[in-house]
Image (cartoon, rainbow, N blue to C red):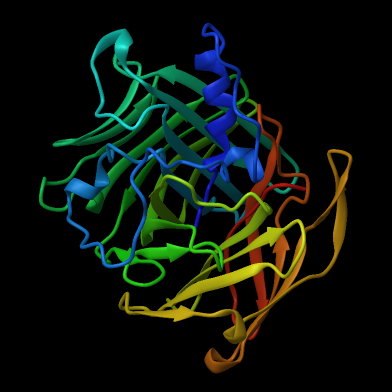
Length: 360
């Protein structure tokens, strides 16, 4: 999923209502994502996706995001991770308005990770004034000078993208190219998050190859490697009982890809699901009974104990692997903090990927 961080809702709502009379809502579920959203459009099965239109914003839904992760190496084999996310949070279920009447808040997250260093940054923006947004023709997603922009034709704007972000301690500028198909996650793009029916619309481009430059603490590296795009939109993706999630996007050296997530609950068993993606982009929905996902080694991270090594087994696919964090201290010390960083795969399949853990 990402659910990637639908992290923003409560913080962003608080920012906007701080000058109003009403108090911010009481938080339910991680980052308020379990708050009721009756006025917004509900996610239901059977939606027919339309591209390139669905690369753009979706009026009527409360939250959505454009999310990129990249597993990178330089010529000497040094490993890095890069992450870029743009979140859109609608405070009212109305179409976008121009100017200061706009009821949308935008949030950007960017990070880089090596085996010894992890840096993260965030940006906030009000919609309607040009500081942040997403356009479809041509495709461009931006907040300040952070940008994900198409270099390709209007028919397939995600075939060739330029990704960039910059902060005081890091920057990257990467070209992302793919000839592989888009992948609809879950049941034809309907991605369920709970037994109660909470869900998002969710598709990915897991076949990107990235190349470009990455700078950390004044040192610049020429890098390349696989990258992954997630797109999700929803109005209430969690229940009030769900405290966070563990999400994996995995590139197998066989050319196959795996997406898994478990939604942890304050009480009861986690909700576990995923998608197996073959080398041609064909998918199989994975249910809880198909997957064994077990935390292994833990590390002390930002004053809390977190699982930084996992066991994943999918017997029907002969997958039996260990997932190990490149940098166990990949803590996103932002307004709403969480763990996110690159991982290595070993066991029946080699490869790499990304792990996000929230609510710890």
